[in-house]
Length: 272
Ligand SMILES: C[S@@+](CC[C@H](N)C(=O)[O-])C[C@H]1O[C@@H](n2cnc3c(N)ncnc32)[C@H](O)[C@@H]1O
Image (cartoon, rainbow, N blue to C red; front, side):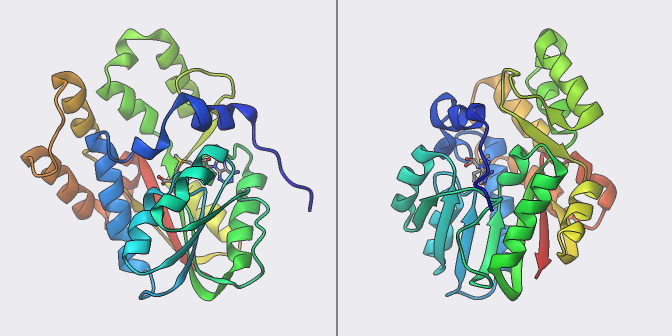
């Protein structure tokens, strides 16, 4: 297999433009994503110790708590800065690409893809990444893949207020709603794909991952959390009534597939 190439703008975005190591701690909506990802994964993970491959693991944000929980974690990411940062989380790390993993067949108890599907714009490439996850996980092991929701940018830029004030943002939101694609070269984010819940489930099945359950990660109230922080300029504490209500709303929304599209991110869980 030839080594796939990562778009230079994705490497630049994570290597220079933003600091991914702060994304899930610096804002209340990030903290909500972190708490819910943890609780959903902990519900499905095998008991520790077990071997986890964290593909697109970034600077080790999830590896850190997984290692504390007793798992052995190996992280793969295409961004050199992330691979340098990740070992501080207690995992091993290598530069790599979700579409062409170096791991042998059937070697991991768990494979996480919490990021790569965001940045693979072609369905065939996303299926290749999911097929690689399926290849390297043991029979009966867990594959968990996250996607950004199709409507996330609509909700986000309602919360920031930029939908009403910035034409550039409005244009990007209109295109994402229509196509799912944040085009390469556009400002504000990087090349990205925004899934509907149906697409995420369909792609898991097309990659041979059966019995998928799709969860809304942040639930339907994350925009209220984001808007409150944005417009007060004050951090929203995790024990505040609004944050607590948003977390509870995410849990209560789980049995209702109509509400999947209200989350910023979705998590697909399957057994290989
Ligand atoms: C939003 S970050 C998520 C990081 C971390 N998994 C988390 O959930 O906090 C997306 C990650 O996907 C990585 N990524 C992008 N394209 C990838 C690819 N083709 N293969 C593997 N990882 C990729 C990026 O480098 C980045 O670390």
